[in-house]
Length: 106
Image (cartoon, rainbow, N blue to C red; front, side, top):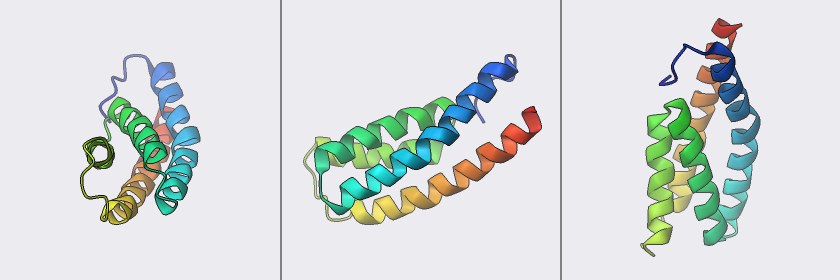
């Protein structure tokens, strides 16, 4: 975690928001990828990229950035579903780490 432990209540709040929002945002992102709704994919990839940055989830940040950039630059989108599968796996691991980290802050 890249967050400073100086203000534990703030850190807890940030992590709890990540836990509450990220699964829902990932579900929506996956639905939008499945429908090739690229503008919404870009929106949710950007949103998840930002929240990943805040908690120090670098691999998540990078994959969401890749998805967002490909859409923005109108690059080949054929491998977005594969990137999405990788993002889901990374997010699942990050969520578990956040849960474990929150337990240590209680």
